[in-house]
Length: 153
Image 1 (spheres, rainbow, N blue to C red):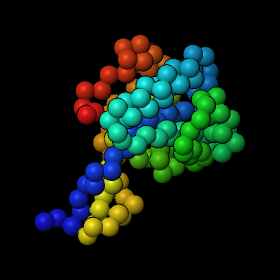
Image 2 (spheres, helix red, strand yellow):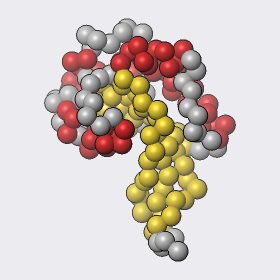
Image 3 (cartoon, rainbow, N blue to C red):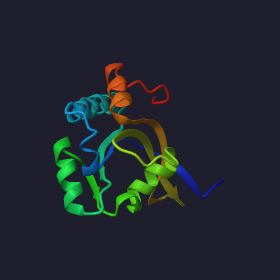
Image 4 (cartoon, rainbow, N blue to C red):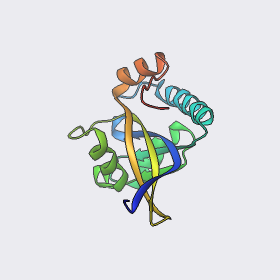
């Protein structure tokens, strides 16, 4: 029997990655589209009886620039700002699904599960990327289609 196992505690994570420097490329409708995604994935998480969180990553060198940009997108459970693409969460998201693509804005959905070692929670998580959409046209198209994800059950 392996020491590490996946606990039944699941979390659905909705992430937004953007930058003050992507503001010129952002459609003014993008914050509203992201709010629609928050509502949709909160509803799905309730239906599935799993946790839900919203994470914002400001890929700016300066924290203040990241805060300013992310403030347009409403409430977040977790914010990561500063250090551009070198922040821990930005690197995690890139390594988990958009290898080599360092552009913004993008949204993503991950399913996370607790890793348990010897019956004790390790605070480590296993994450599976369920969806990632880069740029306003992909994001808008995905939201217009109801943000489908076939692998979430």
